[in-house]
Image (tube, rainbow, N blue to C red; front, side, top):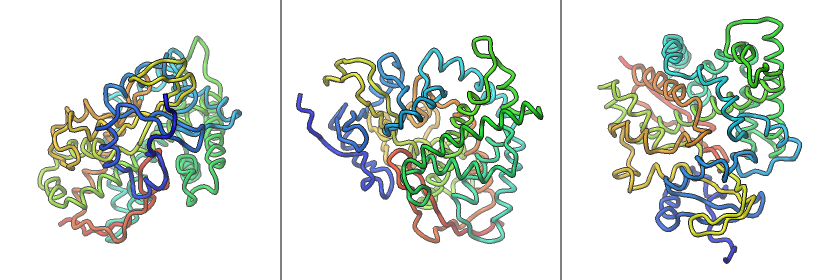
Length: 406
């Protein structure tokens, strides 16, 4: 077949003002699979439709996660370290380690955390409400997932800012406001692993109630995790737990500012908050894609895939597919949440389906409910500033004006 470039989607210029959803809609209508060039290994395959994405993500024997869920080719020494972590594992090893943390994110555990989360939401809004303005991303959106995840893991308050800086450098390493070069992102990942290893060691010296302590006391293949293994798990948890919630809340609130009639609906009927969160997740998915790597030569969707080829599942594509959702580009918080939850692919699919999905929803629901209850007349004080990324859409700054609700 002709292996010349066909089109370019994952290009920083195309993502300068956010995910180019109209282009994705057009590509999905024309292609089930499409090859394009990239700056990492030469080329990759884009996959657009729900059933095809599901097949790739649910079939790790053919499409492995072991070489990274992102396009970047990791330096060999970094890849070797990361391949021992949950995010890079394929079954059956992946299942063994994921079992260590599943219980912390079950609905029963979340409901026990809800009162503390509601108190945190009040405190977060208290800190800005009298000012009448804030930088929403840092002052509000990042606060809830940071407090929840760090409290759960037993990170001490004095370390919060340092860990957040490492997470930002890792996840936004393509943005010069956060990293001078891509290698600093790889280094931040290693630094997070080192911090997590020290957190484990500190817990062993001074045991206390936390998910960290529970994981250290559990066993995999009849042995306990060492500090380095926990460090890799810590890296996975804090990156996944902080960035996606922060970005989704900021992107979703911006949509409510653009659709003030829907914000008024929430103020009049707070019971709509869970449905609004589902629409945030469908309409404004933050993770653009997940990569898998072919484990063998094969034919897939009429194309010859070679061992080592990268397949890139465009997660937001099914979310805007008119074959699945009526008027899919319309932002509508009154959509029935159950069909959205079933059909969007915001949290992925298969063995690596987001372990913290219920926590993410609850973070968003609790924080949005507090905002709706206490803030009105929301307005942008400046155009939001997009993070430079082709992997995760989000704002690095969104200056917000508001009034206190009566």
